[in-house]
Amino acid sequence: MAFTGNYSCNTLRSGLANGTINFATDTFYLALYTNSATLDQTTTAYTTVGEATGGNYVAGGLVVTATIASEVTSNGSTTYVNFSSPAWTGNITARGALIYTPGDNGAVCVLDFGSDKTSTTSFTVQMPANTSTSALIRLV
Image (cartoon, rainbow, N blue to C red):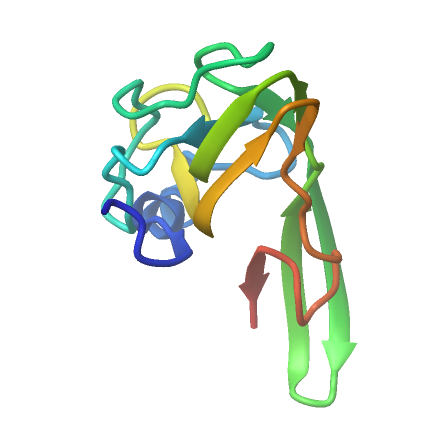
């Protein structure tokens, strides 16, 4: 078993600190993976090992658009980032996904679907609401 939870990757934290990851200007991709992939917080970049196949899915996945917002809450200010929900057609099975930017040190986060998800018509990765309490990436 390769997926054990959802993770922001270590390269996200260092990339934000050193400027190699920029949510306002970078292009982001979401790639699908089977349970034979080994992805966790130490993942540094996109890999084809264990990548899903089938339907109209192609290696590397699809471009996803980052949306950045900020909100003042009772606990202070929160900046959060979410992504568009990509979709493929056809018969696809995936256990999780990786959001990344191309090149070295581009892994942003690993998404664990909790179990294999299969679709015979349309496979959509539905992102959570883009709010300060549910977006994929939240900086408090």
